[in-house]
Image (cartoon, rainbow, N blue to C red; front, side, top):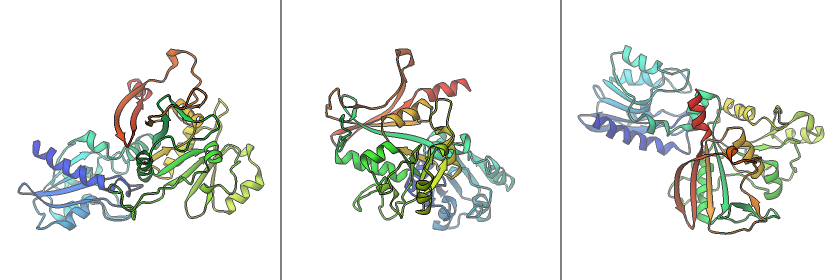
Length: 379
């Protein structure tokens, strides 16, 4: 079993190389082993190109007949933009396949493993299943729940404030934290913000990676879909986020919009979706996120103000809360981290600590809302 763990760990590291490029496909790595030596390796780079198994077979330095393939995700069995990987492994004469986790995609979901076994290939797994699942939280959630994996990013002072009373917020955190946010954007399929943030900050919401960045290859970065929650479609036509060349989607409520402005936005190439309104009178965020999932969006980064961030948390949509804490005090009149209608301690939102690390002079803290664990217990 130890050798399986060793080689699967190498496959996981390969899969991580596709962190910023594979959308909407999962990140997958594969190594091919013969005589306890790796003779081929590969990972999935981007949709429409070779999958990890195919790339590993192509890189092999000797015949792979009788070899063992270690792959982080069950080999696909269906024809997509590329042929089935299970067929490629069978045709190559692979003797054993060790897989990390079963594919949550209903089109695969065990069918690839069955095809391999039927061809006489020994199938072993899952191996390092949790670690392999962590490669693709968005793909896994989209396939199993019909929703993307949602991270809410916020920056605050040590006293829990995100902006001055006037709205001034540049800059709470330092340059290292802001670069880290660019990397978060780069691995996300969509960035969501609210109309309030657009009007106050006029952001472009694009990925800006320096060519010298050691973690991200700036030449391969794709720009995520920019999503604006704007109930009344009141966005100024000169807003940076509407500049052509980058895909933008807006959610609004049909009865609240001004038709002439709607027509002008549509003519300029902005995609607009009408969102339903929940019982509380707010735009139904769950339905909106379902629309994104239907469009193949795996991972969403929410960068917004206190009100919309609080709404995502209230609706049980937050998978990760990423907070950058700056060594500053903004004072009691400054704006709070979130707006949450909580009156009693019993209604407080409990958070599960995930990690903390310094980023320049700031701290990056990741929490998981406790309601996610409670939901699992109820199932």
